Length: 139
Length: 139
Length: 139
Length: 139
Image 1 (cartoon, rainbow over the protein chains, first blue to last red):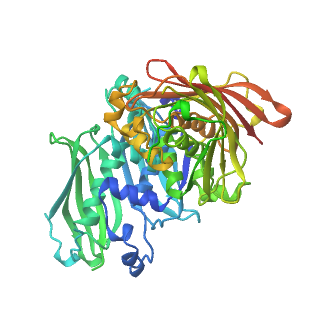
Image 2 (image 1 turned 45 degrees about the vertical axis):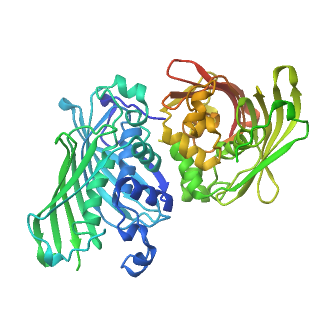
Image 3 (image 1 turned 30 degrees about the vertical axis):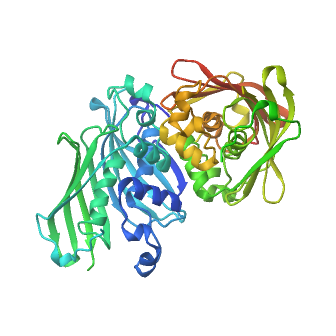
């Protein structure tokens, strides 16, 4: 279930993804862990009067799905997460299905480092997050 | 509890922070939301044989605390999260107390945009995450 | 609330049941405990294109309700669970109300063992799981 | 992350596994989903006076890890769970690390059915559950 791809097997262009429908439970549990009770996430009355019109998920929740792909699939176990840049492009609503996708775009082989394009898309194909990750894989 | 600081009240050097001890429950529930069951997070036997020696929290969990400060305190409600860059500097272990801290470092007033230095530190004062956030506050 | 029926009080034909509507929260939290993020359970887009047409609950979640009846009602405390056979007969959808029912069908008195018919039904009376449990009750 | 192994690629002897340390949170959340508040699981005072001496995890929680391997790894997506037999051999304590392992032992190719030996072991290598699963994989 948890991959463990050796650094030497990584190639430019390798991709992996993970999809999940973001439930109200996810948003509430995330708020409960991180303490972010911004009313846009947990106050329906407030959210309905906001420009978003509905409660939205925390940006870091969708970012967490990107991290999941790196830590479980590409490259999986023993990945050391060095950097992650995130640009939040569009809101994620409760009930949206988010696909996190990563793609190897650069290999700094003398340091066992890989750079990956990272993005999250909703069920309509809209990019909700884009950015880049840097990871090290020692073996 | 949830602040709503008008953009015009933001000043270079303003700071805010939020602290929380990261429990095993936090790490397990975070795994349960994001699907990241990397054994470094949820398999004690594996973690003890790893270079980390103990189970570590997901990097995005600590990053979520940074997001919490932005969305609840500085500047709080109606913050639009545009960008977040994260450099993961040190592991966070179950039981560590993490303080997320943000500081306004630049104001692009014609666009109602603020840039903030963001960091997370453990109970020993070690920086575990550093980076920068960009947010917009319309009012 | 938690029964403790002595072995000597058990009779062939004794029955007990427990009912619960399976919520999205249940399915998401169950995935979060067990790590089963199969898209049939947590990806609405995928599930809608599948033969099931909707997200379904994990089979072991409904099986857990059977275990609940044994451990809390018939015979309750101090039940030692020896065996459980499960045949999954029909899908359980988010929102279905499941009734787990057990019935004593055999008593091996020299070993304080009881065999029970176990089944789970949905709100339409369709059997979703059938099978048999073997338990020991020392006192 | 979620495999999707075609039925025609399954071979006798194929194995897969998944490991997780069972936390108090897991046991409590499982009780909260299934309603099994048997004091052996959630009452420390009671458990300490019982033959087990400590709170134990629900048997179906460990069984759920077996289901996870089938539904996410071998064979993964689009697995139809037909049967699962479980023999509970030893208690699982809070804090134990459980490895669920499955192995293909029979293929009924005219029906796209596979039988798998299924077991769960603790960190000492003791078998806590053994049994057999039957699944169908249409494609």
